[in-house]
Image (cartoon, rainbow, N blue to C red):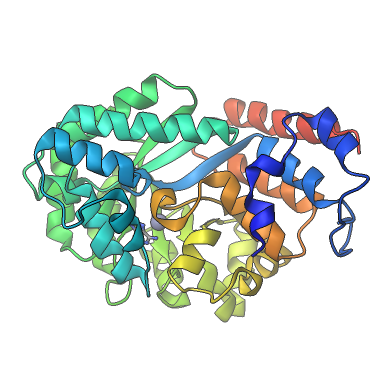
Length: 372
Ligand code: ADE
Ligand code: ZN
């Protein structure tokens, strides 16, 4: 991955400047319509309107805020500085990440902590021209430490109400815990039902197949909650299938291993089930060795509703636009892919049809207005 491409300081601040900027710049390899020079495509990726559909709010907790909250709350950390904590962010797989991610979340105790964390993410997402975010949170990570569920939900929700972008909440069940624990969490959340748009399933995937959570997802469906689940990140394609058939989910989080099963790919394309793909996460957690080996282009070429997302940006080296830039830098993706990804992010969002049409019109107007 070329660091030059990720260096935002090389990008002109406005489109007109970017268009003047192109003539002397190096050109990308030709692929389809992709004769556009780097900086111009880079600027378009950054400025196009987009939604983020796969962000764990606890994964947006930057080391600086971890230390600030630890001090504020008198929580002892196993690291003596921001730098040593950051140095520990070297992961071999999903579990090695989760261990440190749950340790980081231990500084969150009060409603204000959840508010501060969420407000910081929303401000950062707005800088990347994210207009709408659907935010995951892990209630059991906090309630297990004695934090009231209301403090978690109210803090995150209050920040979302204040903007600067639109946002809704998806409550995730931890799949390494029992279904009874998930059911109890759902009961606890009933008084807060109106603040939650949907539920998801995350944490350690291997050995915890979706079917373990069939009853709790059925109960959520009856409550009118929207349904998603992580599947096919480290787990096999069969987990994607059981998430669809046994949990009735509407989107698959990650899902990149679907390509191992051609019939499943056909089904995902036919039913237009969105995949919320997280490129930097996939590299950091060694789902792919390098970004050049990421299967994003194959997923798009198979007609799938692919979206790009940041997953846990404080741990994986970048927010939304860093993910877009990294994957476009490594793969032969061009302008039409950029527009498709921006459209997919809104098509797959849990927004009412009119709002969705409005955002899609904004995307199309943005691309139509480019002086190429
Ligand atoms: N929790 C936070 N990030 C996750 C991921 N990438 N997969 C599963 N659970 C998670
Ligand atoms: Zn995730």
